[in-house]
Structures are given as C-alpha cells and as structure tokens.
Length: 364
Image (tube, rainbow, N blue to C red; front, side, top):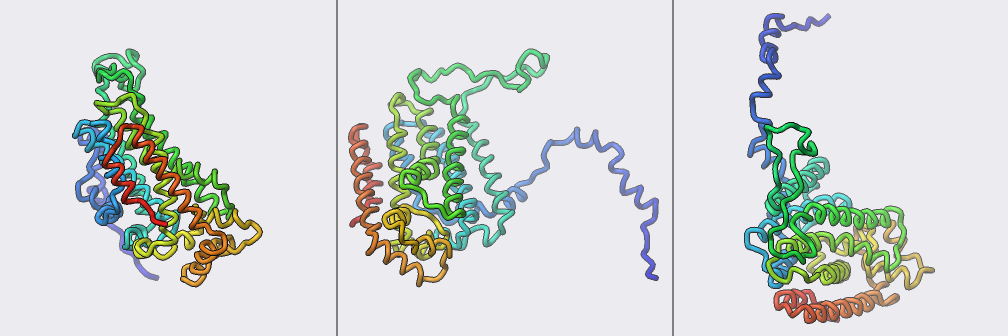
C-alpha cells in the first residue's frame, strides 16, 4: 500500500494564520488589485484586431458629420473612442457567430485566442465603452456622504444637472447619452439576432425584412456616433441627421454584400465569397432566391456552407446570369446613392461626406 505523506498540522495552521483577520484586511485595502499587466492580457484579442485596422469609414463619417455639428475636440475624441470600442468588440463577436476565418486579411481573433477568451474580452470592451461615455455626461449632483440615506433615492446620484448648454432645442441632450447607447446596442443585437435566425433556420427573409435588419444592425453604430455628436454639437443643434445616417448605413451594407461576392479585394481580406460559406442571406442572395422561388439551388448551397470554390462559382454565375441579382443590386445602390447625395445637398452640402460617397461608388 502506497504511503502518502501528510503535512504537519502546525505547518497547516501557520499558513492559515493570514486569514485570522481577513475581513479587516480586505476592508483596509483597495477594492481592486487589478494590474496593468492583467489588463493587457485580458485585452489581447481586442488589441490583436485593432492592430490591423480596416477602412476606417466610420471615423471618416464622424469627421464629415462634424463639419455640420462642430463638436468640441475633446468630446469628439471621446465619441471616436466609444464608437471604436463598440465597433471592434462587435467584430470579435460577429466573427465567432459567423464562424469566420479571416478578418482584414488575417486569422480572426478567436482562432488565435479561443472562443471563451474572445467573448469575455468583447463583453469587457462594451463596458469600457460605457466607462468612456462618462466623460460626455453632464455633471451630476452627488449626495452628501454625511447625510442620511433617506435624503435621496438611495442610488447615490440625483437627477442630472439642468442643461446649461444654451441649446434648448437639441434633439438629443447630454443627459440622453446612456439611453441613446442602450437603445442602439439593443437594436444592433436585434438585427444580428434576426440575421443569425434566418441563417440557422434556413429561412429566406423578404427584401423589406432584410432592409429592416440592416437598418437595425449596420446602422446601429453609425447612429450611436451621430446621436452622440448631435448631443454635443455647438451648431445646427436642431437638425436631425439620423435619416441620412440610416440611408448611408443601408447603402454601405448592401454595397458590402455585393462586394463580398464580386470583389477580388474582399476575397483577399475575408475569403472568397465568404457570405456563402457562412450561409448568409445577403442582399443579392435574397433577391436571387425570391426571383425564382421554385428553384432551390441557392438554398441548397447555403445549407451546405461550401468552403471550396466550385459551388461558390456556380452560385455566383447563377446570380449573375439567371436571376440578374447583381444587376438588381447595382440598380438599388444607384438609387440609394442618388438619394444620399440629394439629402446632402438639402442639408447644406458636405464635401467630406460627398467624398466618402465618391469612394464607395460602385461602377456597373
């Protein structure tokens, strides 16, 4: 019989002595022992994806809208940080939900760091964004810590201070910031949820359902940026820029859907026709299915989620030659671009936003 040595009782007791007054120990120290090194380790999946930036279209859109809104520089920096945190965190989760292989031409974060760590990091970054948001909030009247708890609501903070910005006609105010971000993050997750539901149940949405999903999902982060800017603007405080933001968001996503199936550059960055590999109901695919509902070729391909080129080329040829779905998508993009340019003109013109539309323009 194997003899297992046991530690001497006195040794055990000596090592347990540090817990004799443990309550007073933890009460007398900082509430957090979190270190910069731990923070860096936790954020590695996020740092990985941000080290290889994308097209930065959202940052350019913020600059463009700021020609109209003239947000103070420090507040604009905060808005850019908030939107950047939310955007990149959402990409970490999207890549997991879509089982993507590439993001911006390199392996996706969860293939390097694993799914659990990447999900946790993405969730953590959402809260970092809320922490950044505090820099935009109006000063709150704090409860006197020496007063009785019954003198306020018990939450520690009273109502926001009165708006002293001098712009009583604001559509969104600085006291609305949390509500704005909450509402748009809910919208984003609703849109993403429907996108996933259609994919996983192999149910093709109607074109209107698809556009509503895109407005919720892709438009969410753009609306966060523009609404926060509207809340902090120093000029044009009573002008509603949200409809234009929605239009640009829908245009951007439909264009992205087109390029995913037609662009060699997209193939290099995300993989060839990645939407087919993910089983995604993108705009051209929805049109192709609805144009000939009796033909189940596309549905069968989506169900298989092909990784090799053969089925992808076949489906792309079908969309191009049989259902003319790429021609239809280009026609829709042309109409949306025309309306966006007309709205830019109505709002007084904006050379930066016009330049972005020039860059996004797709030739037939």
